[in-house]
Amino acid sequence: MVLEFSQITILAIIQGLTEFLPISSSAHLILPSLVFGWTDQGLTFDVAVHFGTLLAVVSYFWLDIRRLSLAWLKNISGEPGDEDSQLAWLLILSTLPAGMAGIMLNDLIEDSARSIPIIASTSLVFAVLLYWSDRRGLKVRELSELNWQHALAIGFAQVLALIPGTSRSGITMTAALLCHLNREAAARFSFLMAVPIIFFSGLMRSLEFTSAEGQVLQLPTLFYATVLSALVAFGCVHYFLQLIDKIGFTPFVIYRIMLGLVLLTLYLFS
Image: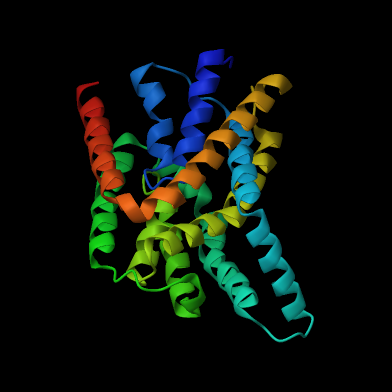
């Protein structure tokens, strides 16, 4: 498979934008093939742009990740816990359900759930759920007030993101809002949860290289796609956190509904 420069650019930008916004990356990555008739971009490209988004979130939250990691290491070495070590434990706990489900159900999801009707339907259903949680949630809790029940609930919600069109960031923010976190805290926790999930997801896909064929993208192409997706994702995270308290989730809900309707229309009339 050979990708043109314009295709590489568009796909890398799509990945960078949609990985962290609550609008579903899988729903968007299927659009180019529907609208332009593009062939699948391939496993190598997918791993490269996912690595780019991982670089973005790690770079943006580097100080937080470093602080939480040090606090966690001190805690397991016998020192008393504090707010940072508690948050680190909660992030680990919240990652476990999706991690185990991903290992057990990945092949099933890949084979049976990656279809336009499913992606369109989940985009619509979880858009409504996001809107409801944003309206119903009290939005009074900070990250320091998160407990293990909240973390586990958000973690189990993240399992639903295995279904294409759900949006990992969307469903975790939805669950966090239902746990009464404020919007910024919900987004921040969702982004921090993304670090281990994207890392292990990319690792699993990398292991598929041994059985994949036709992955012939050149190193400069992969480097360009990785850097572009990282830059776009970094800006996306930054401005999302800056604006979410002001604009709320309604614009993303409206966008998701429109996207779901567009996908259904294209499917029905293609």
